[in-house]
Length: 96
Image (tube, rainbow, N blue to C red):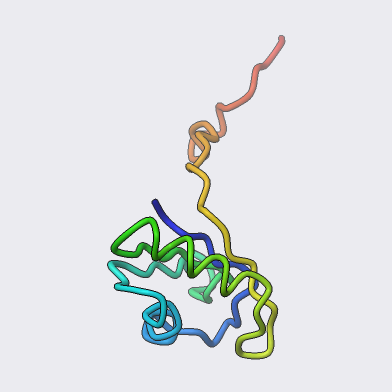
């Protein structure tokens, strides 16, 4: 399971997020996606912890908490949706 962490400051680092979640258990992985065009952090991230029980405690404690001047949105990450082949532009029907 993975945890979604939204409304993050654009200044947050992997180390920052790891230290916050480490208070609730062992952090296996932190991922902070960046915008491909600007290279800027996108304002959200994902955290994987060692056990489901640790993740549940972290979600309960951190959802809505203020951190780095922002109110965090923390919940179970949803599986990524298949949005079609975005590169080719052929994810719609054409009628001629």
